[in-house]
Image 1 (cartoon, rainbow, N blue to C red):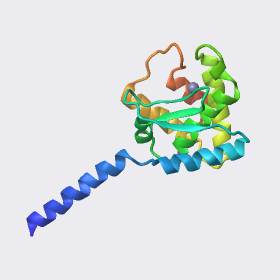
Image 2 (cartoon, helix red, strand yellow):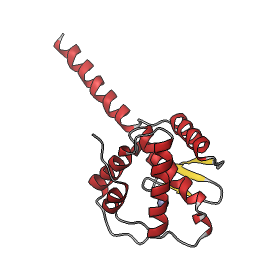
Image 3 (spheres, rainbow, N blue to C red):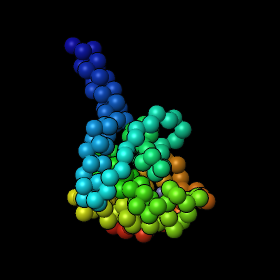
Length: 161
Ligand SMILES: [Zn+2]
């Protein structure tokens, strides 16, 4: 009897690990994407890519691309909304036609993303949680293309209650 309980407990534990690692499905991402596009009055394409280096989402001439690791990194649809809305911001600002990323482009895309996700009904505070999670795992190193996450948090403001 004790052994059965141990086995059940082990499966529950294992199940938790598995679910904690894939909280966001592709269909959820697609739903969020469609909602954002509708609210923003835009019409871009979304691509899922298999790419194993780091977690990544970016805007290109083709549309917005998001990789598998990013899907696993994101905790909920509100965080998905921030990432996608940020990339839609790059599309809207024409950043994909410019040479390389700049602090200004990133901050502008953050502003755009924060506004678009909010008016689409997503919780802005989850954008902050996303950055904090990233800092806790990867730190917050100096970068040529992006402002530090800590600064981006300050810009967006407001944490989860
Ligand atoms: Zn960006």
